[in-house]
Image (cartoon, rainbow, N blue to C red):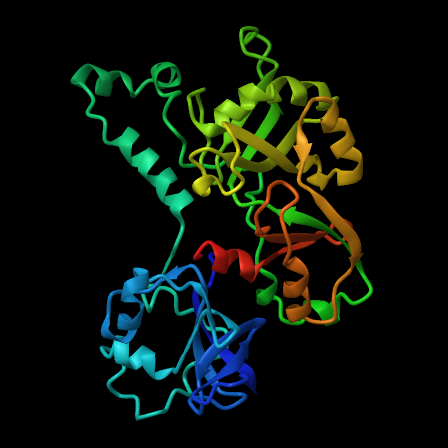
Length: 379
């Protein structure tokens, strides 16, 4: 399911901001946002636009021009604000065509939770995804000769000469790594009260997936390997070894050999983690070269190995697990969870990006981003 970057939401709570006469704090879902005082009442519906959204170049968003129309985490009068809270009139104001019949301030047709991302032409700020799409476009734009085009109708030819082309299709048996933020689950602290979760540090890098899949070959296909080794970025299957950070890590840690020693009799095994280092997200951890921190080891039927067990196993092969912070219950509220996410990274002398919170038995997981990290790096 695509993420709702812009949606209709309810103003849950309004609170004053100390030493601020013209602004106040609004709670939407689990987000805290700064709004103009008197513009909303508790219980009002509004248009909420998430952080890391890119809004269109239109007069209503002119105030974001200096930020290149990107919705960022900001701080006003010592109050952190994450996201834009705007009146429903923005829908009619931005795209009046088709809304002429609506009377002033009559928005009864709009329901809470309605997705407005496409209507408002909101896009996600996603530099990693943009780089992946550019990679595909570069390979697809290569002009091919008439002979090449002729032979590409044959599978054997495509198999030999198309290996270097990134695949748009992510392997169907692998789940992508993309945790939702805790603010999208406004009642999680009450609902899961008393349940123990594992807290690990969230690392700001590139998501990487490595997998080993038993090759279901026919009896005459003796030349085929016993296993298929799969290397993926967050969204793309990288078919052939290259100089990308994903393949460099695979070679640096001999991940194919490690997975072969761990797969046992399983049909597949999946190792997922974060790559950090030079050329990646401004190298906030000041790493020379590239490095890798694992956070998932998955076997059939999509069960996650417990970190306290698998981290010691991977350590034998020189592969590090993401720093484990604690194992405890959730805090009483989302603001308290956000406070808990703050602190220094255990990898380097820098604010940690946040925390990832998991309960493996229930299959629950989400991330809590540290606002100090976002403000420190202007994100």
